[in-house]
Image (cartoon, rainbow, N blue to C red; front, side, top):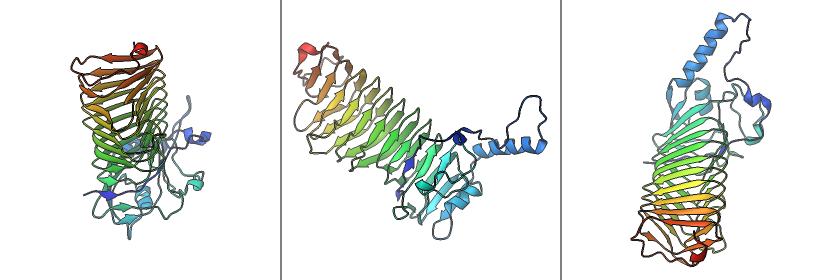
Length: 337
């Protein structure tokens, strides 16, 4: 059974210098004596980061923030909880800088696991601005439904299993790994967006997008590996963004994954690279199914099922290693290298 977890994970980029202070309670200088109690406190702090402290939360009587302040980092949610949390590895105390985000926690946590229990719901839609602020922290989501976007920044890490999500964005070296889950998008935020060396790994994931923005977009040296999955864009607006966009030195590998678009193309451009290994890419209405703009590369390896391709510009490249791809038509073959 899956449980509802509306959560907006925002990674605030414009942080002051206090954010980059040492996470340890105490720092020491060369040629100066260290107090034993301060050294012990540092060791205890580090030990707590690796220790799993699990607590079941009854949202009708318990408080998640209080549980975190008490040292718990694995929360099993029963009932409906309505709280915002701060997850970061850069600061050790909350100074009120994030009050504009609706955050009230006095104790940030750098690693947190949220797991669905009995009738577990995290529904903070009535609590004003909804934000669990994560900046370089780690969030594990197990058996939950997330109904608001997840934004990863500054080396943050997200692990999801057996859950339902809406939107995921990863940037500044952040990474997301999602298994056995679904992403369902119907708003203007897009489904999955990677930029600035963001990375993504999906296995056995179904993505369904009825909104007007990208189902999957990669920009500025980002990368994604998607296996055994389904990507379905049901949007009927021909003026909306491509179903998949790969650009700006980014790369996408689709392995045994089926992509279906109602009315939008798959786009590869500006040194983007798309590798299709098994699976298929289909477009129900209009053409082309795949558009490669130079310099960009679409590489088909062992996938006989995809439709027409258009290459714009002589630096556009289509590499076909599957001799059985008889369904391929190239409407602008003179431009394909």
